[in-house]
View 1: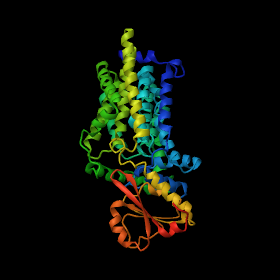
View 2: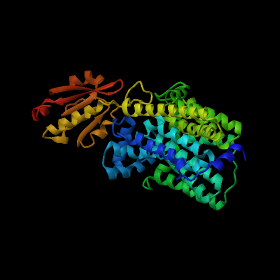
View 3: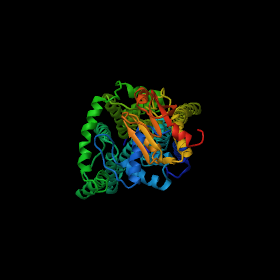
View 4: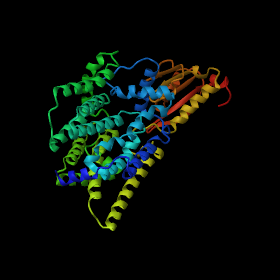
Length: 492
């Protein structure tokens, strides 16, 4: 047994002891940063699409996996119940994602034999305060679930390697099955994990046939149930494999999301320097001490960075798959720093550095998620809907409230990229959406992109008042209110 491994065994304490108080404080911080003002920022394009699928499920219209354009089914089936119980709101939409993001902290507990109290606590604080994890842990997108199930898979495999219990193997298989239902990029995650495992060479033992059969069932159950929409759409199972082809093509071609190879490295340096520096030192220590788990995490980090950097298609939320293993690698540094006997002044200096680094991460996370969430200069705010778009929504709802027609207004939206407006106007019975301006565009309320105004105005036969609003960076919209609507209502 290596020196590091021996220190891990001696460092294990019951998770309810006082030494774990900083760990649980990290969990509290994770919850606070993800739940406070959860409905503050407007839904962006992808959230609007996902919210509409959830509405279809809520209305009883069902869900069918589309391998061409949208990701896996887990987000929709998992998000249905909170929306049903809490009502149709942005908070209800995002709550399951926020909780999944925060629960990654207690999910670390089974790794305490690998990283000890200090390592697990340090990793917990890095995950809790990560600006990237916080920002996207408040969005209705798939990426948070992807990294949460990845962590669950690594933890359960680690437990199996420690105990050789068939139940832990079955748990790992179930986590893998769920991971594959989240998003097609799960195959990249698996490639990174396998490459890291090959380098770390963990001790392996072939399970019994009975254990393998049970594991196969645990893997297949969530995969088959979700992709077939609980056996109502059998074609979804075949589509789950066919869907890998168009997404592989998009990754290679970029499809408008091309970035240079160093994009993720620059993003991490800008938002995750504490995680990145900790991972660099933790990986170096792991290699020197031949710590298999540390080497695995370091190799996993490097593999994910290389894989995502090599693909032209890049969006900032993909960085979460790099942040997770980097934070675990940094846990090796925290473990070693706590285990070495040092003078009081040196220990105080280390604590001060950690407090400053984590304090900066907390400030950066709060600033990005609660203040500058729609600032186009903020790299995390990727085509984020601007906060002023909520003024547009309030304005149209105000028109409906003042009109005798109410939400039976003839609302027409002419925009190539209309999301998330269908979510905000979901209660308007006569809302219609067009990518292009039709020959007869007249209605009670018209919404269109400002660059379509020259095309629209010559086609209008009725009188309208004009009201411009910002929508997203580089895109503004104009609301036309029919004068007959204004005349039949009180002044706007």
